Image (cartoon, rainbow, N blue to C red; front, side, top):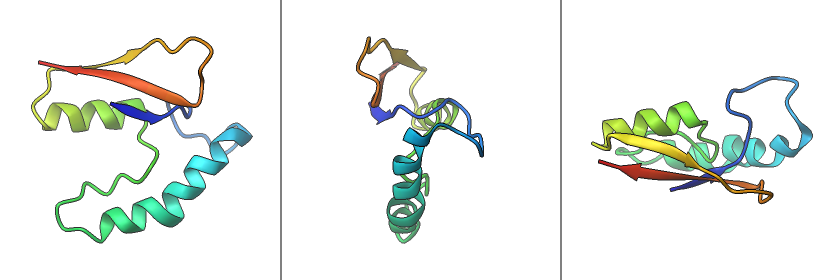
Length: 81
């Protein structure tokens, strides 16, 4: 699973790099997601806790963040069990 590598929790004074994925999430992806009946309506930015909760609700036993080294734009997860 892949997600935007934003901060693990929202902060109003967050890093400037978060403005692009958060802006896209609020103005494009979230409205599109909410327009579908079966959507969870999460938008583009899924913080780790949101992704873990969604994974557990889908029947996975764990959602572990994988190391990405210096590649910091994406966050990768291993969903298992």
